[in-house]
Length: 174
Image 1 (cartoon, rainbow, N blue to C red):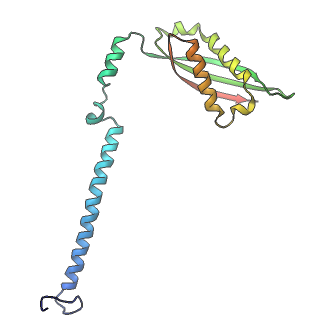
Image 2 (cartoon, rainbow, N blue to C red; image 1 turned 90 degrees about the horizontal axis):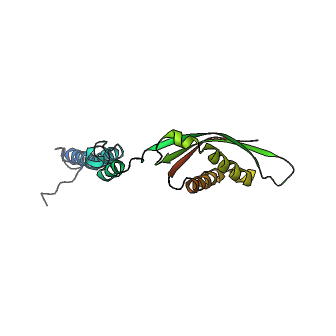
Image 3 (cartoon, rainbow, N blue to C red; image 1 turned 30 degrees about the horizontal axis):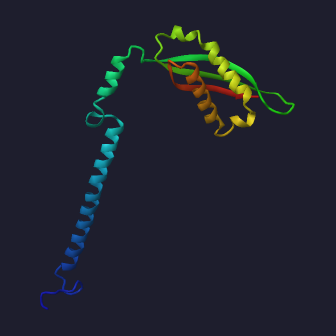
């Protein structure tokens, strides 16, 4: 029983040293928790920045490099399409117009000049789809549906070539 000392008994500093140890253990616990979090955060940052252990130091992956080297026309071209204007199917007596400007990203074409001749076909696809649409179809998530429907129709029209994306730069309704 003489080995046990109460924290309030005696002024020899045993209570202060016990509190000091608790403070040190809290600091150690905070440090022990912070180090793994910093390591994980640094790893995630390195992965997103494609640093050498994760992304090859900015070099393309071997499979991608082999695929790009094997096909001569695998580079992507951006075809700018002039504005297409169409009247929407309103169903009422009031006429509603829409004006759309877009760029189409095509993969597999030799040159941009080869794609320039297909601009009227792209404009026709745009105008046909827009004429079939209603003004309510373009609000909210309708913009996403518009983009996906146009992308699907362009992929069918450009069949041997691959239409990878469509960028709608202007969409005005009146």
